[in-house]
Length: 128
Length: 130
Image (cartoon, rainbow over all chains, first blue to last red; front, side, top):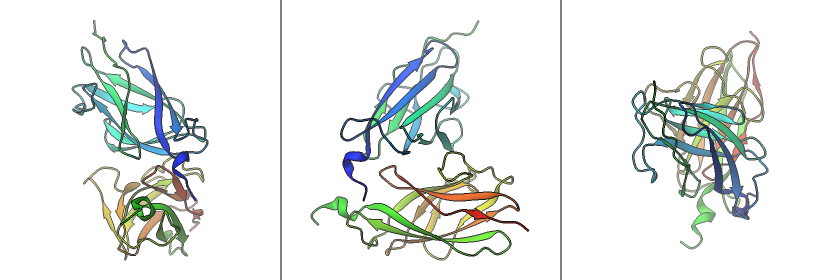
């Protein structure tokens, strides 16, 4: 029987190359006991314009892509904006986001209990 | 109602039936936190995977061609997006969901049920050769 202590209730996110057009985000899902997950789990994710996750990005205006970089699987439910992220068995997910010039985006993870875990800003990219 | 967690879908039993020309009937029984069959409708996200770990999604028209609701339950999906390989499904009040998945010849697929707590429950293999 699945126990709540072993459900993903938190995540750590590290944004690399945040000031470029294609920042990478490394995600580690963490269980209720504070440990890295030890089995694959899915969380819903979307790209937001703001640090509160209150406004979803517009594909083609703010961002143009979200894709798996290394670890995990993305099952998109809204093209290039939102979908289910499935971790590897160690709770790792790696994604890359394409941010439009002069725009800012945040990756929002919706944990199964409804809590939002939001990345650092991906901003500062200006073409030319 | 006391412990509401006990009445959430925390597990699923997936039974893959015999295929007809690659069309597989898949029966899902959602199970609550107390280990009993659900007694209210529940919602789960499902997708078709190429592998038994659910790590690679099937490609529509390459691996599979359809994923649709059957007799029991309801498929709720945003129109026009990934309808053939993924979707949200709502069970009947007894926790039953029927799905029909069509697998192309020589291909392999697995039905992955994503429970509300994020846990994956993965079916047995669906493979078909014409």
